[in-house]
Image 1 (tube, rainbow, N blue to C red):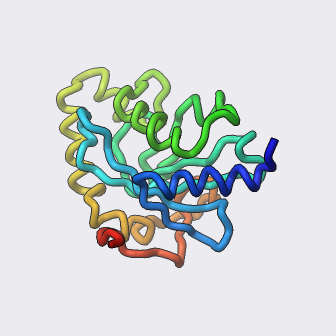
Image 2 (cartoon, rainbow, N blue to C red):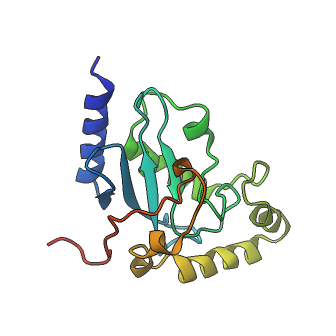
Amino acid sequence: MSSPSKRREMDLMKLMMSDYKVEMINDGMQEFYVHFHGPKESPYLGGVWKVRVELPDAYPYKSPSIGFVNKIYHPNVDEMSGSVCLDVINQTWSPMFDLVNVFEVFLPQLLLYPNPSDPLNGEAAALLMRDRATYEQRVKEYCEKYAKPEDIGAATEEQSSEEELSEDEYDSSDEQVAGKADP
C-alpha cells in the first residue's frame, strides 16, 4: 500500500492529465483550484466554475474538502461559502475514490440530480420543489452572471470572507486570469 503523500501526488497528476485545468495555490500539493464545466443536458451547461480542493494529510483515507468559488444556484451548495453537501464526499468517502471521480462523476451527478430534501440553499430547494422551470431559469441566470469562462479568473478576488479556510472562500494571492488555453 502506498503512502498518502504518494497517492496524493498520483491522484493530482491523474487529474492534471485529464481534461481539467488545475491551478496550484501553494507550493504543496494539498490546495488547488480545478476549472469545472457544467454537465451536458443540464441547466448548468455552459457554466464554468472554479472549485477549490483541499486534500487533508490523511487523503485518500479522509475525503477532500470541495467548494465552489464562484456562485452557483443549487439546493446542495451553500450560496455564500460554496460548500458542497454531497454524501459521497462528506460521509461515505472511500480510499477507492480519487480526484477524477469527484470531477467526472460526483459533481456532475450532484448538478444533474439535486437533492432538495437535504439543502444548504433552502431557497433553491423550495423553488426546485415548487416550480422546476423557474428553478432552471434561475440556474441559467446564475451561470450567465457568475459562471462564464472569463469569470473564473476573478472569482476568488470577488469573494471576501472572515470564515475558516475550510469554508472555501479563502482569498489567494496566486490568482491567475483564466481563459487562454495552453498551446
